[in-house]
Amino acid sequence: MNVVDTTEDELLGAIARLLSDHAPDVVVGVGDDAAVVRPGGGDIVLTTDALVEGSHFARDASVPRDLGYRAIAVNVSDIAAMAASPRFALAALTLPPDVDAAYVTELIGGMRDACAEHGCLLVGGNLASGRDLTLAVTLTGEVAPGRAITRAGAGIGDALVVTGTLGASAAARRVRDDPARWTDDDRAALRRAERPTARVGEAQVLARNGATAMIDVSDGLALDLSRLCRASGTGARVDLGAIPVAPTATFDEALGGGEDYELLATMPLERVASAIEELREVFGVALTAIGVIIEGDVVGVGADGSEAPLEPRGWDHFR
Image (cartoon, rainbow, N blue to C red; front, side, top):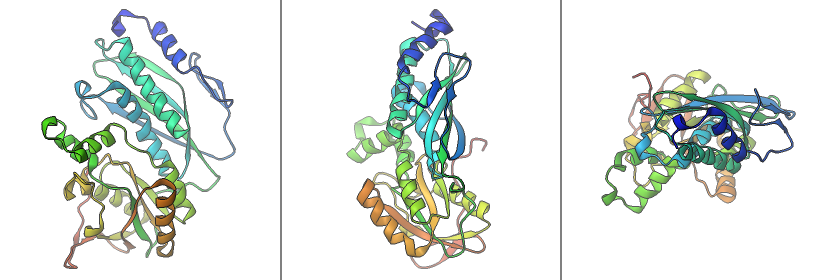
């Protein structure tokens, strides 16, 4: 049954049944004019992001449950980058006429999966008809008063660190259309692109170890680093050979491919070792020191010690 063969109330009713389990801090969930929740005692952190057909994904190449998961996860990643914990999500779906009700159910199921994994709740949203499929999510998070970590706190001499590896998502886009030649590393990259990991717990570890600035790597390491440095009024010296490249990715994909959703942070040099050890022990996630914050510009350092400006290349919707 396509969405044109059902009513909005029928589809909303099906979604409400999927999301009927609520925590005590949800007073009114799906089905009313608005959700009602009980906030905790911290600062409220807000973010919103959208996945748009033709820009972020191709519908015929995407599993709807994974697509729903990803729509939540990319927003959770933004909350994590502030060292906050995700709480409540709203989803606004634009549905083309040829989408069926089962497809919508799978989208919501993927959103519910992501919320369950990251400790937040999907409490409402909106349905609309349109030409292209769009999943727009708004997410709230919470952090102890005054403890949000922004892009603007990096100080001269701070170490520059990044979680995990980079470039897998870009590599997945490169190999997606040639399944006959996929390696195990390619399959891992494809899965990572379909269901990205938001580093919520890892961000808490970085915060406990004195992180001064943080950003999630959504548009590419070089571009997101330039944003962090611009907000902090600093430059950076990056050891290009230290950048952790995913097994199936190229160096260029690691530097500017985007959609990695790893955390790029700055912290005191003397705290790096303890952060590396804690992340490895608690989450099995690597933390790599890739440079230092300096005055001036963002530069890359080659194997021979030569320095050159690091171009802020990455994903730009309008370029």
